[in-house]
Length: 327
Image (cartoon, rainbow, N blue to C red):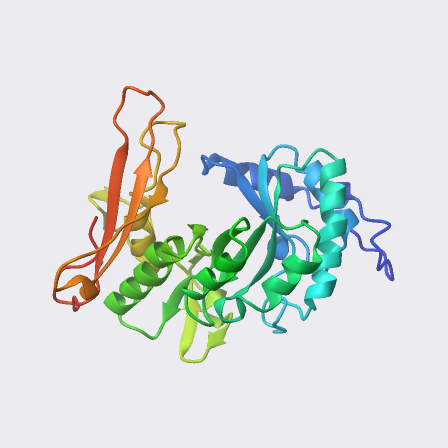
């Protein structure tokens, strides 16, 4: 949207220069979603400047934005995917400028996310960011491949009024099916909300045929990330729960099963109704160590209808031949 050589300030940025398919693609995505979209620059813009981002928000008027995060992994520099080395002080300055532009243009209700990196620095970079950003950020988000999920709680203790989100994890290669389901359920689907995350997101990538480039995206130690759903159009149609899946086979990563199971506890009970909210839960008995539990309350649109109370229960002790995640 700005091809002018040397225009480091994006003075010639123009949203009208976007490819013709951009907005039609966004509309296609919207047809698959019931809720508002968040804006993440990773798919639209690489290097960030406040002015073009503010103009992009204004132009995307067909979408009700509820959140925006503008840079991925500020403590990482990896040429294989969007990341950057950015001191907390610089991110704070950008956040202050962007929040001012957002507020001035009628977008004060849009949440601004900071940090977007791993749990293992929960009391370092994000704390410095909040201290220096003068209220520009109302949310901090975490990624999953460094540290442990309970470290979200360390940040929440310091800043209980700042929303926490778990915003990145996806499928993994090289481990067995049940271990993946257990890890995703324990760490993300139950663990993240239990440690104060408003929600737990999955990079729900879908790839097809020979285009599974996500398999080459990154390697984190012995982990290698992969798509959550893989499609293959070169094989006969298969049945999924009794229904034909056009002319494609589908390969579901274990992460998808964990996400699908846990989502049943928070999906609205009524069309257009509120989502489930986490409530406190405790486990007793001699085998309490073997269970990981999340509890949720979903309110109703009508005050005469009963609220729904749900448990997401993981039997951590179970092996592949035994019972699996249940609700």
